[in-house]
Length: 492
Image (cartoon, rainbow, N blue to C red; front, side):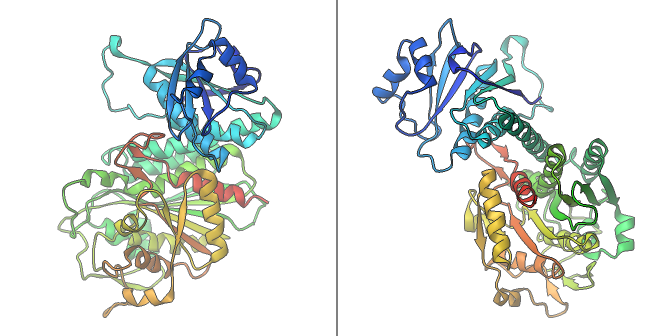
C-alpha cells in the first residue's frame, strides 16, 4: 500500500516522527529553519558539515541522532550540484522514503525549503516512488522480523493553495507510476493480455472513460494480419485496448498514447537465449506506461482529450507460430515480410498505429521496449526519441526532462528506409544489426503518415537489472512520466 502524503507548514524542528529527512545541495550551509533543527540537536548537523563527514554529494545519506523534542533520527540527503531543483528534490525524496522503509519507523518528515509549488509536487512523486514495493507474491516474514512499512509522510514546506494543489498532482502522478510499475513487476502468467484489459476496464469505470477491447475475432474482422501473426503461436486471446478520456473540448482532436504490451516475449521461432529470458515479462512496459498515464491524467482532470491504445499478446514458439520468411498483410494494407519473429513489437504496433487513425489524433506518441540496439546506443540512462518533426522532438524531450525521464533524439532519415526494403513484400520487419533501433522506428513510420507521430524506445530505461539508489531493481515506471508531462504540456 502506498504511503499517505500530507503537507504542513511551520518549522521542521517541530516534526516528532521516526525520521526527518533534510535534502541539501553540494557544500551545504545551515541557515533559516534548519538553524532551529541544528540547535535542537546540539549543533551536530553543522559539526558534521564542517568536519566534512557530510558533503551534500548526490545520493549521500548521513544520519544524525534525534532529540526528545523532535524527530527520533535526522537524515541528511545529498542532492549534489543542483541544476534542476525540482528533479533533485524528487530524487532525494525517493531516497529518503527508501531509507524510511528500511528502518521501519512507519512515518517520514521531508523538508522542502522554498516557495515553488512544483517542488512540493516533485517531493510527493519522489516519496511515493521510494515507498512503492511489490510484495504480493512473497510470504510475510515472522512477526518478530517484520518492519513497519512507510504509511505516512509529511512534507514540511510552504502550506499554500498552490502547494496543496501541487501535492494533489503529485499524488495523481505517483498513483499512475505505481500502477505502471506494479503491472510490469507482475509475472507473465498473472499479467496477461486479459489482465491488462480488465485493468483498463477498471480505470474506465472509475473515471467515466469509454473503452473498447478487440480480441482475436474482432481483429480478424479488422484485417490486422501484422498484429495477429505475432499472436498466432499462443492460445491466449490477444487484446487491442482503447481508452478514451474526454476532458477537453468536445470534438477536439485527442492526444493519443500508444504502448507495446507483450506480456511475455520468448522471441517466437527466432527464440531468445535462455539467460535473462525471465526479464521478458517487462516487454509490456510501454502498455503499462499508457495505463498508468491514463490513470494519472484522469485523476488530475486535465482539460484535454486523450486516447490510450494498447496492443497486447504473448510471443511464443509453437506449431502454429509465424515463421521467418512468412508474409502478412497489415491493417493499413501493406505487406510485411517477417524476417525475424523476435522483431515482434513493431508488428503489433504497426496495426495499432494504423488503428489510431480512427480517432483522428492531434498527435501520436508511442512507447515500446522495442530494441536491444537502443540499449547498445544509449545504455540505461536515456530513452531513444525518434521522429522527423523537430518541434515534436523538442516537446517530448522537454516533457521527459520535467518527469525525470531523459530522452535523446536519434536520426530518422530517409536513407535508412532502404534497409527495410523486401524482395517479396512492401517492407520487411528488420533491417539487420546495423542501425537496429533506427530501422525499427523507420518500420513504424510506415504506418503513421496521416498524423504527427513520435516514437520512444524505452528498452534501456523501462526496467533496471540493478539497484538505482532512488529506485530498486525492477521496473522504473518509464515512460509514464513522459506521457503525463507531454499531455500536461498540451493543455491550453
